[in-house]
Length: 337
Image (cartoon, rainbow, N blue to C red; front, top):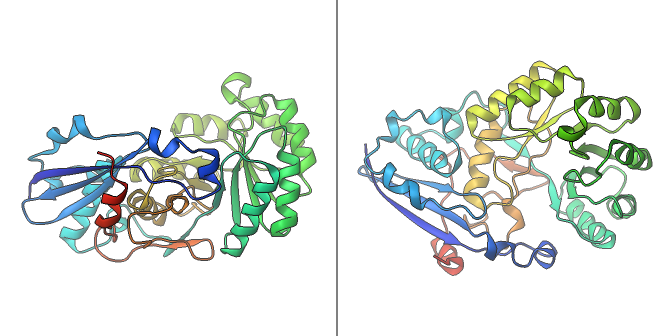
């Protein structure tokens, strides 16, 4: 089998409201590229870039390669997704069977909101719980996070879990601890990256854990950093990701320490990357926290809605390869290059 051609479709798909209101230019400033990798046996595979990514410089290098002889276990990204799709179809098995032992027939996903006003967060929480989500991750800011969580809890109920992701904007350990104490009475499932561990050191994360009841979740891709955090007793769980081997390796380190993870294989992507992420998630035993696979926050996922979450879960495809097909009508509608 040889790769004979690679088609690339650059698409700009708006987000759902109210994300689109607060990030009106994101989808046009950072369009997503989808590839369709063809072979001489009539089998093709699908892949997807991150936001703003393109495959132009790599396509020529792929022509003539044999997907069956590549080290596909180590591949991630859009090309890796396409190869898993091709090999799975060629062997008649779903992609996750090529990645490891399956632990999940359906995987948990969380609802998600970008920075917005507290009343808008509350409306989104009400929507999220009605859609069946159990957890809601929000991009938090220190000046309104307490009011936000209070209103979200009033709207969605006390059992609705909230993951607070400030992207380091809580700035200092002292401010993070102060806010944590104000939020401890709510169902906060984790603080993700409240302040910089690079600036303040892992001991400051350890001290945070000693002084609050809110779980701490560093967002880490480097396995050495994960080990550092574990040795410093500086984490309760991790947000991690990457391709199948990388994600499984990082999750395995956490599992050895008795910690769960959640996965961010591709953030704010479309359906193809959502499918790939779902297969990766299926083989990671301790990926028990709802993932950041957010293909459902676009107005069209370009795969006919095949992986639309139900009650906070996405079913793992069981058909060969990724188990999804491109809606070419939708692709052409949103195509910009």
